[in-house]
Structures are given as structure tokens and as C-alpha cells.
Amino acid sequence: MTNQLRIITLGLALLLLTGCMRTFGSFEPQSQAVTESALELSLQYLDGEHVGPLYTVSLELPADWVSRFAVNNNGNVANFDFTETPGGQASIFSISALSERQYWEQAGSYPGTYRNIWTTGDTIFVYHLPRDPYFSGLTKETFTTFAEQVPSIVTTFTAELTQ
Figure 1: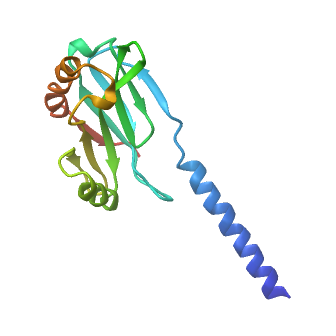
Figure 2: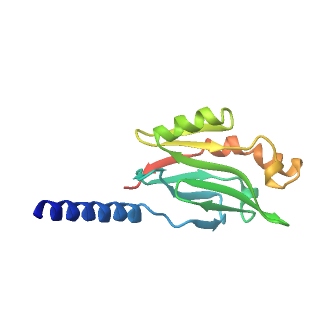
Figure 3: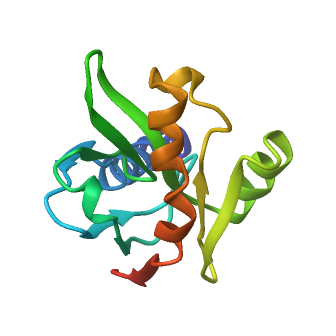
């Protein structure tokens, strides 16, 4: 009887700890308007139950993006959205923080649409720029104007370990 009680107690303790790890690793989605060219945000990968280290990411946006864009950050992905559209926001590109396993999974799935920006010992940062404006809802000319600026934006990317 005591062995069964110990097993049940151990099982409940493990269940409680697993729930706590999920809570500590949660990230509340955030949206911030781009109010200046210099931008800082936090990113970390989420790989199943494993939460990667937190990084402060910095990059420089073009002056014509200020007040016209918002950054929607889900913790491991930051979407850069053009806000001056009749139907809401239109995504131009995104930056993701990936574990090594996630990186190799997505690299095989969508070759050519994701590009490496920065690699640390534990996190790989990539950006995604759609090949065409179809899903953005923007005209080809408007989308192309912003898309052509993305390669120079990502050259300003830096990541610093926060915790």
C-alpha cells in the first residue's frame, strides 16, 4: 500500500512540475507600433516543452517604416506588418527564433523562403520573406517596395542573451 501511495505522490508531483514549466515558459503575445527606426524586442524558441534562452534582438528599420508598421511578437516569431491597409495589417516579413531541431525541420520544408540571420550556440534566427504578395493583400508594387528593403534590414540584426 505504501509503494502505491509513493508512486501516486511522485506522479502528482511530476504532473505539477510539468504544468509549472509550461506556465513559466508562456509568453503573452505583444503588438507594438514602430515609433522609431531603432527597434528592440525579445525572442526565444519554444520547442515542445523546452523553452530556449531569452534574447534581446535589435535591428534598424528604414525611416519610411516608422508609424506605418507594427511588430506582432508571439515569443518565438516577430511579424512585421504594414498597417496602412484597408483590410487591417499586411505581413511583409517575419523573424523566428528556432532550436536546432526546428531549424532542420523547417529548412527541408520550405527551402529558399527562410534565410539565416544569426546563430548562437543554442538558437538559430531566421527571417521569412514571402516570394509574392498574394497572401499580404497588397499590390505587387507596394509589397515589392517594402520587400526590397528587408535584406538590408536584416544586416543590422543583433541578438544578445538576456537570461
